[in-house]
Amino acid sequence: MAKLIVIVEKLKDWNSYYPVEQLMTPQDYLVNWDEKLYESKGGKERIKIINLCRNYKYLSKGYYCSLLAEARGHSVIPSIKAISDLSRSFLYSLETEDLDLAIQKAFKNQSPSEGVSITVYFGRTDKEQLQEVARQIFDLFPAPILHVDFEWDKKWEIHSIRTGSLNALSNKDEDKFASSLDDYSGKIWRKPKAKKKYRYDLAILHNPDDPMPPSDKKALNNFIKAGKENDVLVELIEKKDFSRIAEFDALFIRETTAINNHTYRFAKKAESEGLVVIDDSMSILRCTNKIYMHNLLHSNNINSPKTMVIGNSPEQLKQAVEEIGLPMIIKIPDGSFSKGVFKIKSPEELIQVTEDLFKKSALLLAQEYFYTDFDWRIGVLNDRPIFACKYFMTKGHWQIYDHSKKMNKGISCGDAETFPISKVPKHVVNTALKISHLVGNSLYGVDLKERDGKAYVIEINDNPNIDSDVEDAISGMDLYNNIIHEFVRRIEEKK
Image (cartoon, rainbow, N blue to C red; front, side, top):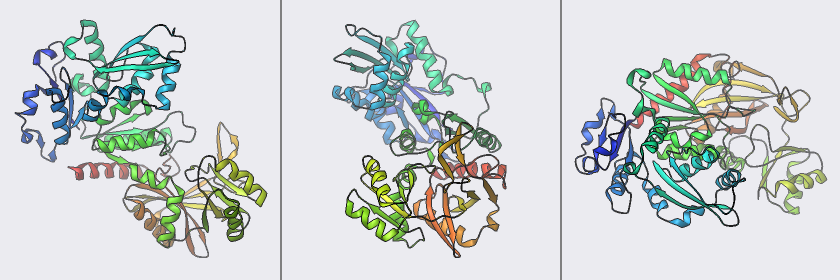
C-alpha cells in the first residue's frame, strides 16, 4: 500500500483540514528528506505525493517538489509534464475527440455570448453538466486545483486553464476541495477503523455494460474473494477512474483491450506510476495485432494456418486466391471475439468484402479455411499453463462466436468444456507455452487447432476470458488465487 505525503507551502495552509499521516513543507521535502525513514521491512514503500504548493512556476518551490519527486521515484500530482503542459496555452486546444464531444454536449443549451468558468478539484466540479468535461481535463492535466475558462469561437472551446492555490480558497471552496480529495484518495480522510488495512491494493478495470466481458460478475467477485484471502484489497474500477490509478499497487485489466481505446492508456499510465500491470501495454500492442502475430509465428517456425498479409491491390487479391484457395478467411488486424473475420467463397465476394475493410486498415490477413469442431484455449500465466478448455463452434456456424444473430440479448456462441492440464495433449500445451513465451510473461489465452497430430496456433489473446463455471470449472477458486498470487509476487519483486 502506498504511503501518502501532502506538501503545503506553509503548514497553516492545512489548518482547515483533517490531520494527515504525513504533512510536509517544501523545505522538509526538498532539503530535509531522509529516504531511510520510509523504508519498510520488505523494502522501500511506494510513495504518493500530493503537491499543494501555492504555485508551480518554473524553478519555484512547487516546481522543484514535483521535479525531485519524479527523480526519487515517487508518484506525484501534479507531474512535471502536467506543470509544463499547463504553461503552454496552445495545448488547451489539444484535439482529443472525447474531450471535444464532451464540451459540445455539455454546452448545447448555453448561450454563445456568455463565457463560463469552473474550478476543478481532483477531477470534480460542482457544475453537474460539466462533470465529464472536468474529469477529462483532469486526465489530461492532473493537478489538485484547476481553474478552467470556456469561450465561444464558432464552437465552445477551452480558453484557459491555470492551477489554483489552497490558501486562496473560501470556506465553501474548502469544503468542495476536501470532498473531492476524499474521493481521490480515501487514505487521507478515513480513520483507521473505517476499513481493514491490506498489504496491497489491486484495481480491476472492467466495463459493467460490456455485453461480452472477459470476466462475468461471479468471476469478478471471485477475484475480490481471492484478494481478501491473500491480504489484497481488490477494487473494481471503470473508465472514469483513470485519475485514480496511482492509488493502487497493481492493475488487472478485465475489459476487452485495444490500442486505440482507454484500456491501452490505462496500462501505460499504470506502468508509468510503477504499478504491476496485467495486461501490460507491450502484450496489448503485440497480441491485438494479427499481422505482428503472423510474423512472430512464421519467423519462429510455429505451426499456423497458411496466411498471407495483403494490401489493397487487384494483384495481391488474385495472388491470395491462387496461393490460399477458396474458401478463405479474411481478418482485420485488430479484431476480437471473432469480430472482423469473414469467410470468403468467391473472388467477387473477396473484392466486395475487402473494399470496405481497406478503408479502415492498410493491410489485411488472408488465411486458409481451417475448420475444426473446436479450438483449444490454453490459459498461460508467467510461462505456466493455468487452465485448458475446448471452445466449440456455434451450431450451424464456422466460428465460436456468431455475430450474424443475437440470442438472449447477447452474441450466440458455442459450448465450452474444461480439462485438467494433464489431460491435454502435450504438443498442444507445449506449442501454447512456446508462443506465449515469445510474447511476454503476462496472462494469455492461446487458441490452437489440432490436425494430424500437430497443433496449429490460431491466435494469442492478451485478455483471455476467465468466467465462472467455464475456465474455473476444474480448478475453482485455485484459478483466482493463482492469479492473485502472481500479482503479489510481482509487487514484491518490484521492491
